[in-house]
Length: 126
Image (cartoon, rainbow, N blue to C red):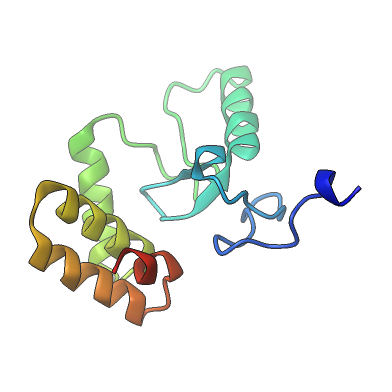
């Protein structure tokens, strides 16, 4: 019985839409670049079905209803807006991106700032 129960919580918290605990595996969740919210794939899928049924041409974020980015440049612009607002999730993601590109000083700076703002994953990446 214990094996098939949902976990009580995760370091990612709960999905802000359905309030179910997010899974430990990030493959089962999606990070929205417009608001930096992690949303479960079930809510994302349900939102996509709703938008298709309503014949919407512009897809929106299931949480904040902001139009989803259509290009990589738009996605980076949304991310930089969140970084300017001191969003810890956006700072951590920028730190991870800097690390992968080989800029370790920037990665350390962004992940440290995210960790100071309380992001658990940023602590892990440091």
